[in-house]
Length: 126
Image 1 (cartoon, rainbow, N blue to C red):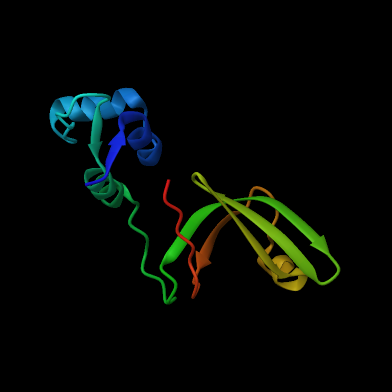
Image 2: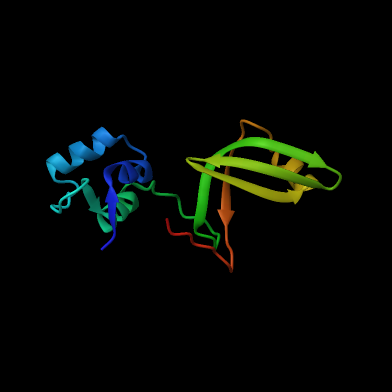
């Protein structure tokens, strides 16, 4: 079973190390009893992340990887536009037609969501 250090769990959960320690104290997470640095089960962290994920409204879209956020950059040149959205800790960049970006009124500060549907997804393990 994958074990995560408290700092790794805190980073993934978007909370402080102290919060993870409090969750261990109240039983929301279980610390490993092995000697060495305190760790928690990766599976428990994943369950907490899933439970705390915001419930998104049902959309008539087949893509389920939806990242709501805010537009941080728009670069238009010729017929194309590069649009950057900051969605929580994730930075998503989309390349679209300039016309589409203008029709959507995309500019820094606009709330937007990136929906991602891909046939190839690369997974990196740390």
